[in-house]
Amino acid sequence: MATFDDFLKLDLRIGTVLKAEPFPEAKIPAIKMEIDFGEEIGIKQTSAQITKRYEPETLVGHQVVGVVNFPPRRIAGFSSEVLVLGGIPEKGDVILLKPDVETPNGTKIG
Image (cartoon, rainbow, N blue to C red; front, top):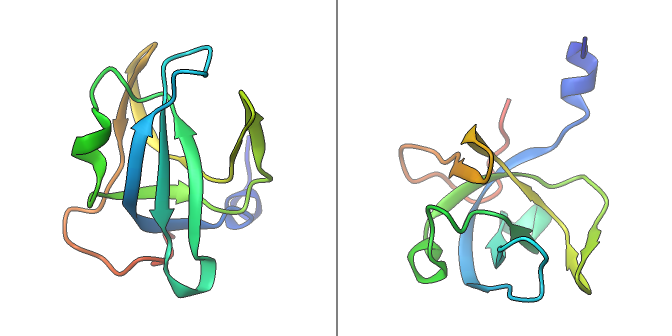
């Protein structure tokens, strides 16, 4: 079992998608995004396997929740700096987690 201290190690923040585009080089269909996590964290990039429900052009301007303190991962030559969170009702299907009201970028999740 994870402990509460394990949870506290994660830095979960709200950010706004600034840019999104297809990522055809990825083995599994994905979308590359640039997300603004506010002044303290800045703009981070990520690759997310969210193509079943989302098109890149529909993501721009939407807020998402991400883990901002994992080390970057190389995916098909791309540095993914953030893990965007979502619900997974079945394999290959991701529903992004997002606030239900406009929230300042960089807001911590607790």
